[in-house]
Image (tube, rainbow, N blue to C red):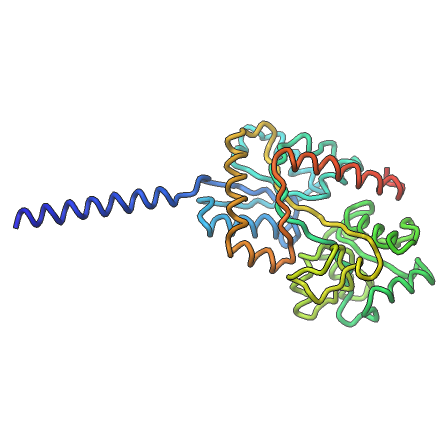
Length: 325
């Protein structure tokens, strides 16, 4: 009997050891990621950070995630915070996108991506030209016809200032139709939600924004998307036409990605890279990505840095043409 008790104890110890080893094997390489979001709740940056953070945690790629919305200065407040507190931000990633290039060029804030550690671009969100569900516009060509008659009669809203990404995308779209982009009547709102309210109230007939911010609203019938700036129709939005299929060559994708504080270690960057790479292979990620109309756009390390330099030149050329530089 004693022998049987010893045998059972031995088996229990072995089983516990196996469970411990299995648990250790499944443990995430990263203990924590703290995401800093330079804008308010519900915007593109917020959706991206929270969507990605959620997947990373649910898939056990990170043990714990936290989020901090730090609005102000067009994103400059968050960038300054990352730089000034760099020695305390070893587990922090700040989400950002094309505006970090545009606002640096325009001098809205004194820093650029070069003052941070570019980690990776993760997704791309195409631009969308949107109208209210009851709008007289049911087709992009109707907008083009009205603009041809009287450019001043066609107002297009955006959730940020003149010279911002929403404005530049709108200008590029009308330029693609052969018009002078400087004639675009852009109505600036200080947030995407306010721009949407302006659209739905009839204050402005058109809205320039990101597809991810309006895709679910279009599916529920609140708005209609006339066109997107993708090279071809998206699997997640097969009924939405592209400008290219209507003879307008404008293609633009607003990347979104992450930056670490200056001086981030190579070891930490490698851990983030491993977690993001694994994320793309999960069903959870595919669900989040397709729900928002995003496309995978992973560029890490030097590839991301070179991409940022190329975009800086592209956006700088357009801003100079429009008289913003």
